[in-house]
Image (cartoon, rainbow, N blue to C red):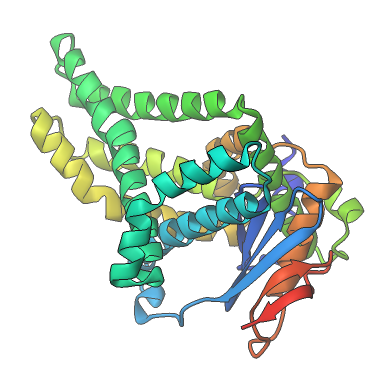
Length: 341
């Protein structure tokens, strides 16, 4: 790994970030997001949305990290659901009658809820219930389970430092194994290609080059501001903080770890911000675990993936008074068929 190609000396860091989704990429700029999806007919679907106005909490260190974490969960889930809906709308069912019956059966509760409370309320219910489920799953697998498993190690050692170290290492190993397993799935691997395209496109923009697939391809798929690095920071910081609490009984350990999640998220966010705008030796060393993890969560993209990233990037590089829109777009992120909002 050549760190000089990741922490590029003459690059101008930007706050633009992104997220790989199903068959596409969401880019988040200063005042809006742009979601670009590659449709089955190879054309591009785009949707741009305004971001909420910054709140005072966004200026307070650590707390802004907690707010950003929650916001990313909600927006990320919303975009993932949107991309799935768009692709489903363009898919042709194999059996029209069978597909119709299935959708009617699946949609009874949704239809009732929409009639009772409105379409917007239904959409919000789906988003927040998905976020809650994701949080419960993540906390259960990567917070509660490791500390419960390590509870058995208490029979072999009373050393609190060793017990906390085992728990932290187990949590990291479980997370890495999870990534390794899902990476084998063809659909996930394609998402990881879009992830790599997002990073290459941001590198290209930060180095002042014209946004073309050829220019983007010369960069690494690894980036110091990636959310994967954030997750690694979370696990490393949690290892350190949890060690300060000693090794109480199982219930107290679970409660204390849950209560410290916002603190861990806030500190990890600040560390990620620092890593994104600095190229010092300390930052490089701290970033190494996350960068190696990115080798698993990114894959080398083709030009078709980079075209999606470039279109999304260009769609957020506009003035604040530019209207948002939804429809089909060209490779420059400009609407060619659809509606302005």
